[in-house]
Image (cartoon, rainbow, N blue to C red; front, side):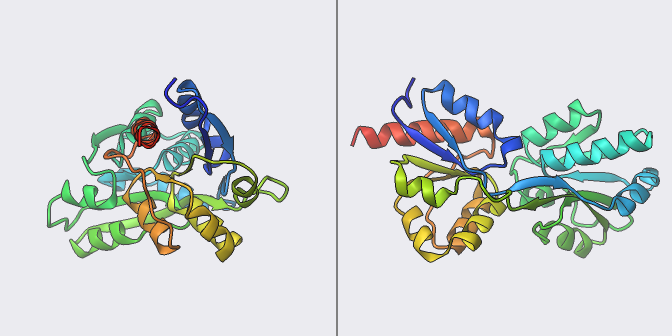
Length: 255
């Protein structure tokens, strides 16, 4: 129970925080959930449904998050077609969820970012078509670079991140009233929504608490708002993130 006596604040959407919470609690930590985002499906499925009805036209399905897999899979099931398109999955958690939902995953890049996908594909992609179901707001690096290489990329939005309903306890209130040993961010949007709603004094408060992020894209988002990351795993998985938090907080205790 290496994290006994430690209080860790997580900002993940409430519907997604189960694994992170249980792993941290399994190590003895007290976990406070203060979701800064909520994940909801899109309201209009027209574009998604049209793409699903023409799946045979695509060479690859691009899956960059477990959320994208889940919401896309639900629509595929609702329409009643079989998806036989090869999938490229970014990250082991995404690949696992994709396989569970019946997709054939052919490529899982070593680097769990857009850069990893690009490194795993040929330089020339003329005549290759990608279907990319994703969040409403996402980095444009991947589709832009694939198109530069000659590919056709059709992006369909399957979910959105929104601010949680009012009434939930804010991160600022928790940090001001509790001794927090670590704050965990698992996506750029968890930081962005917090920073935009919290303002300068809260960010100053947060900068005094060790910040853990799941990977480099989230770290870069933290940096944009002046927050320096102290904990980041080599692999962007919940398991590796928890292990990095454990090691870091143990090391602090021994200094």
